[in-house]
Amino acid sequence: MFDAGRSPAPLMSNPRADRVKEAAKLAGRSARLKTGRFLAEGPQAVREALVAHRNAAGLGRPGVVLEVFATAACLERLPELAELSQGLPLRLATDEVLAAMADTVSPQGIIAVCRIESPALSDVLALRPKLLAVLCEVRDPGNAGTILRAADSAGADAVILTASSVDIHNPKAVRSTAGSLFHLPVVSGVDFAELAGALQDAGITILAADGYGDQNLDELQDASALRRLAPGPAAGNASGPRLENPTAWLFGNEAQGLSQAELDASDNRVAVPVYGQAESLNVGTAATVCLYASARAQNR
Amino acid sequence: MFDAGRSPAPLMSNPRADRVKEAAKLAGRSARLKTGRFLAEGPQAVREALVAHRNAAGLGRPGVVLEVFATAACLERLPELAELSQGLPLRLATDEVLAAMADTVSPQGIIAVCRIESPALSDVLALRPKLLAVLCEVRDPGNAGTILRAADSAGADAVILTASSVDIHNPKAVRSTAGSLFHLPVVSGVDFAELAGALQDAGITILAADGYGDQNLDELQDASALRRLAPGPAAGNASGPRLENPTAWLFGNEAQGLSQAELDASDNRVAVPVYGQAESLNVGTAATVCLYASARAQNR
Image (tube, rainbow over all chains, first blue to last red; front, side):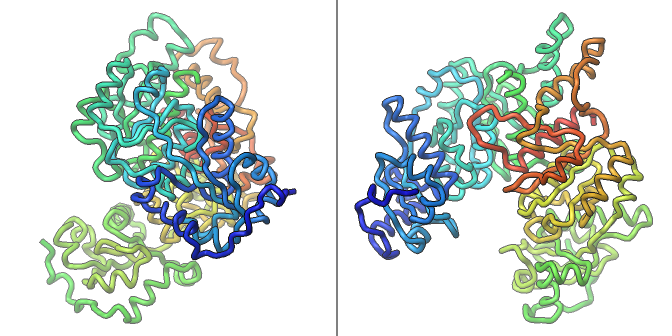
């Protein structure tokens, strides 16, 4: 049961209070940029934020959560969230206050104000990543969140967003990640030319996910499976990039795909084959298939 | 250029006209059930509907499109759509009229009233399908549409929805299919027990996509790749279902997953491995990975 004694602050019940308005402003990009904060809404996102916070604290690093707002009913129902919040400012609030703060229709009783973490590209590359997802001008927050979640599922080491991509801390994007935002480093606002140079220097193969690519993902998977499962002279003959090598996948804009500069900077252009009559794949779907192909080839 | 002489009917300019209201009602399930009609909105969906209509007509079968409403500007911009509409009632309308009909914020100048096609399960099975996607209580229209689009991309032979799944002719679901709704047969409102029996009788393996499944999709893919690429005694030893066999994948409810009855009726429960910290996969993502694994094993 939630121990109300932990929170001597009075119940927040005024949806028009200044701190409520300030939190609500974090739905907008300018307030996020100004404050370096964003909101995680609902039990799933907040739980993942709190677990990431605790893990960071265990390593002596600053945690991601600054403050938690919750209803007493939510903490009664999910005592794990009260427990994970220990040591953090935890404010009891009414449903009306949470609704006024949140972008979601119903934040289900809990919201965390989080710190935007901005790891440097060089720090991520210093960890010798084997699998990276790069979002190049992906504009839809739902797509960006879906790709980040797929990258997490596939065990990618980090997600990188170029400067003109959607803000991953947009409430809809955060929601679409289903907590995965707190699982792996996300580098934002990267200049593409700089990124391409850094990836080359790090010896990471750049693969463009491109419906018109001359390499067929299924053929690359077959070649990789042969090398892995039935090594021998025949297996070594296949041309094309090796999915088992350290790889950065580029995923492009929903309407235009990857730009010429992005394609030019890639080592190869790889198409996910379309077997039916579909004109193309949704970028989230294509990213999932590409990242899982690499994960499998790399025996993650 | 669009030949206005083809359409002697006057320009529809009254957004409150009865036929506008009737079309708008098709956003609701009851009107769709009553009339057997639904709306395709926007150039991409209407184009795919018109192509499907023409293909059906070429085979002497009834087409899917009943009536097209478009702005003159849209037909000027996309003359292909006017051409594809030949022989169909094509009404010129204002943007306001189209906006009043449509569920989308902006139908981009064109809407088609379409006939709900209801192929029988027995007709689909008579074509000896090799790959089927079955939606069991999938409730979110966006997810249902995404899975249908992924099924189309992977070359599935049909999509089947059990009785308690979302209506695939819901405007949001239609939109999420990005035209794929018109590419493959969709059987709706199927009783699950009946379906399971029919699939068994047809010799189709039923695989449950289940995060807790005891079979690992990547191991099944490896075994299948070995049989396909390096056949020999070793390749024949793998246990577990063979992805190259005719397969129906079951995808479950977003929150609860597959029911016990659905799991019990499956030949195997297959998990898409999660390599990172993600708790689970979105059902659309999981479906994409599963369907592509089968497509690849079946050499589609």
